[in-house]
Image (cartoon, rainbow, N blue to C red):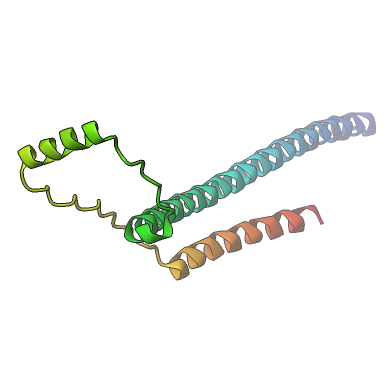
Length: 148
């Protein structure tokens, strides 16, 4: 082979390798971008999951709080301020007494509605949140390492 032909072949090969290198760099950048996007999506899903668990816990606590407040107000009527009743006029008093006598004995008091609240175990909730937090921290550490 002559030297000019060999030189041309080498230049052609170099051009092909440079084009291939550029193509590989673009593919690598695209893959890195996709990895970052997926990591963000995963982090968002974990945060949404944590928020959902927290909302459920808050809802349960609010339900328990409402039940306890209702129980407190229902069980201790002495805590409420009694309303001062007006004395009825003599004519209406007689009508009311007659209506009561005609109705018969007074009906029994109604039972209060019973609300059952199941408390979640705080330890399991905390452990679950800590586990999710550790996964998030590990992913954040991976992100830091990739760029350094």
